[in-house]
Image 1 (cartoon, rainbow, N blue to C red):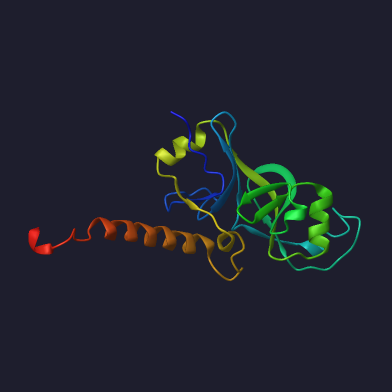
Image 2 (image 1 turned 45 degrees about the vertical axis):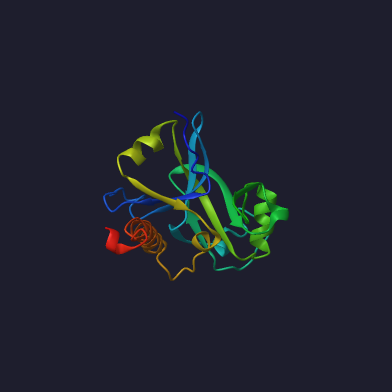
Length: 187
């Protein structure tokens, strides 16, 4: 049976996930195929480092921007920027949300302090079939991602917001199933 791609969806860790990195995590899926497995970026794991800390170390110029660097997962990878500027996109992840992987594009986005944006180091990945196994064991909940999820204000809890949305969607689904069909006296 073919795997349904979860690219552009969120994986929301269930309360049973106790891994220090993935507990209460919300992962934006950026790739998902049957042959290659899956890649994603944890959206709600800011570090104490800021863009100011990276200036002059990773970039050729100094600048001051207190935007936090996020940790996208345990797998080493390039510094990437999620943003909404199509001209500086390497990949569209969700409608209107792009990813810059190219170092020059990322540096430009960061030095211009482009908003909305999320600057991320590293990523999360799953071998072929691994994510499907985790889903079948109820490790993750899924829902389509949108711009509001990806660029949620820092003072809001993305995990709690996503869980509430899934519960509300389920409630709507159940309520539709229990609506009376026509004249209730015929029941």
